[in-house]
Image (cartoon, rainbow, N blue to C red):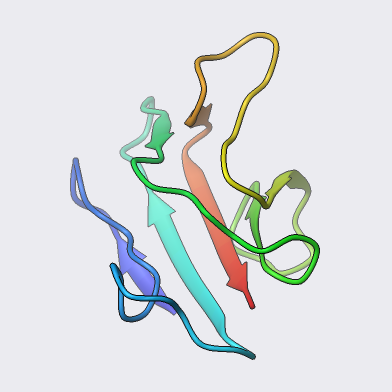
Amino acid sequence: MSNFTAAMGTVLSPDYPEGYGNNLNCVWLIIAEPGSRIHLAFNDFDLEPPYDFLTVRDGELVDAVVLGRFSGHCLQSDSEQPSSRTYGRTYFPLFNS
């Protein structure tokens, strides 16, 4: 697990920009200052559904509430810009391939 507490940072899959391997489980814990929120922007997102996905959880525990599970080539919702998400103070992304 990698921990991030800086105001800004970059999270990359293993061997980026080259392809990632099979059977990977990557975990990052991102914690913001009290009163702050975490904004996650994807510059390059391309995961093979349904095998590869990024799960975002609300908190650092594996059984924390799932805020989203993403796969495919782009991320969109009706209320937000493509490839962009804002979360609460603790962000727990988990990448599986």
